[in-house]
Length: 420
Image (cartoon, rainbow, N blue to C red; front, top):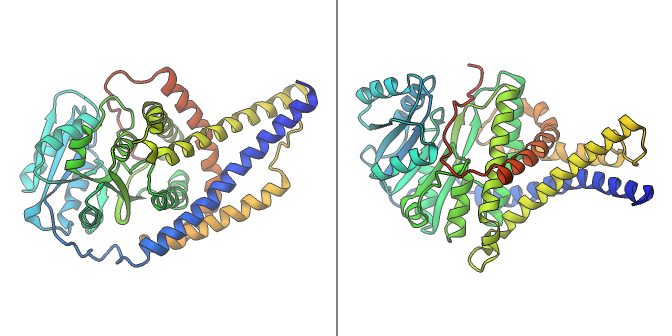
């Protein structure tokens, strides 16, 4: 390869680095607006109850591992759930916690008649904890939340509404919102869940397939879970895996933005890094597990999601290649034709795009969080930070999935729930 060819290659890679997020941002903006116009605009507000045709029995599952600091608040908040008491139960599964989770759950059983508790002697992982709770559940609808989640009073009803309306909907994902936002990382993640994740879920809903439900708040039709064999205990991210399994088997997954749930997120760089690498590895494991199957006749409905993942991985590696090129230029004074800073034509386009993306997202999300505009400054800049984090963790997660794919149970580690 000549020096001119090498320079052309690196310049092309650098163009891809900016072209991919620019293109995806506009796709998300267009998709989110279509979702709003045709599905979201006519719905009642989150603080209003949906008009349920009937109210099936609901079992709310809470898998727990070392959630002693949050579990009391989570259980107490369920008292305010607006759903018929006689058709609502809660099962908390303590998956071998090493803190005081078991003791607190035992005390909570004495306080709340709707609560049942199961203690597992060893840490077997979230998937097996959910399976255990599912076997004990009386409900035909299972609402699964994490041990730190605080549901809005009407959230369960909005999740059930999607399942009642569409008999082929196997799962409904809710709308998680960040609770801890006093630190810089907390504020940035408020922007992520609104400007990035909210738009992505709306867009994927438009073309009919979701990459993943929100593991922190989702509802499942028990019939659908039985049909696909429940959660896979060997998969690192049970939420991504169950989403692909359902959709590949002919079930639909829907997004219910009115089902608001407040969650805690990492507020340290170490905690955020571990979480994102775990998510990326789980995505890689799922793509490797189901990728080839999606080219079969029955699996083709998931091809748009697979291609979206593949394009994102190509872009992530373009980031790494560009970084290596810049390093070579810096260390060896070797001209590869790279621009160390953002090229001028891209700086304007990306700046305008991120501004409009944030503006659209905030206008959509203020229905669920009225004071969202005060985080506007953080939202404008977060997409650029998000792309960089996503690139590095996506590559690392994929390599870990390829070379260290799980052949055993994906057990829990103590979660990072912020600095409080």
